[in-house]
Image 1 (cartoon, rainbow, N blue to C red):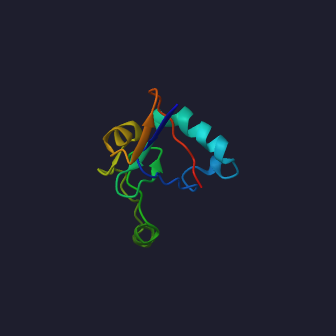
Image 2: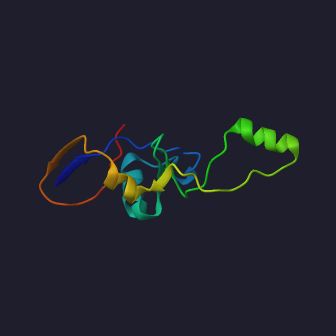
Length: 106
């Protein structure tokens, strides 16, 4: 079994509403099944579906007041989860075999 920590990831349930009522084990299975399709913001550690910039509420209100739509563009601080995992420092490890998994820890 492999024990390896690369730090914490933040799961914003507003971005992943289907996971709201799931158990830790169900979320962990989902994370491992979708690992290659996820992204992470390097600054906040927040998981994302894509690389697009996410506007805060104040910015969205300002666009709405002006009658404009916010521009969709890629956030330079968002990378593929695989890349993030590979480039982050290992905080602790106990490696007996090589296997990648994401764990849910409350």
